[in-house]
Length: 301
Image (cartoon, rainbow, N blue to C red; front, side, top):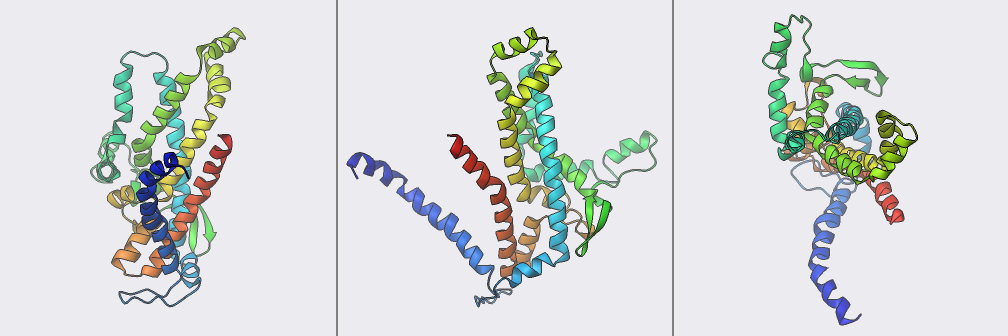
């Protein structure tokens, strides 16, 4: 290797070593612990096989977490992508005070999920939040928001009722409010990057402004939509702080998520093997979304 290549390699060598130890090394250690009998404060690294994984997939709480995560991810991606796109189209209309609207829509991103969770917990408090306004408007059947234990459109699956947990809707609203600014920025940058000649050509062919967005601009923004969906899926699968600050596990685990179960199992229950198994499952779910995306991007390059 020539000296011109050795010097840059030496500069990045510490980073390579750090990533190997603190990322891949700790992932390997977590995977190993998940296959052991280490379920108390006393370290026990005897091999247990897949016993911890079998326990989890038969566990009521973990099955509830999988159901909650599925619906949270679905509505979170649709909400962030859809609202971000429409806000980007709104700002693209050369409105006055564009920078003011951009700042307003993107402001929630400056907050942490913990702050967002506390704020929306106040707003959705069944007795002191927006229900006070609904009550003064004469609405008698007030929503219970994140305290509602109803599972809509449910049917028995495993040991749980599978369906839409109504309490998760409040959490989805808070998460969408927090992250819509990100998709707005992505879509607005994509729209502004489309040459005016493309729009003019569509208008000359007789397309209305609505058709220009629906048939020309939106298809050209499909790579951005995929990127937003992948990033939001990644966030939703490992979300912890928003749910922890806003609702906790909820009655009958209607707002529980795998990260919270992992935290309580590992650091409060000292059941390190089960906690490690949950962490590995979360990593695999994230990899299902991220790895194909990275491979596709590499082929595109």
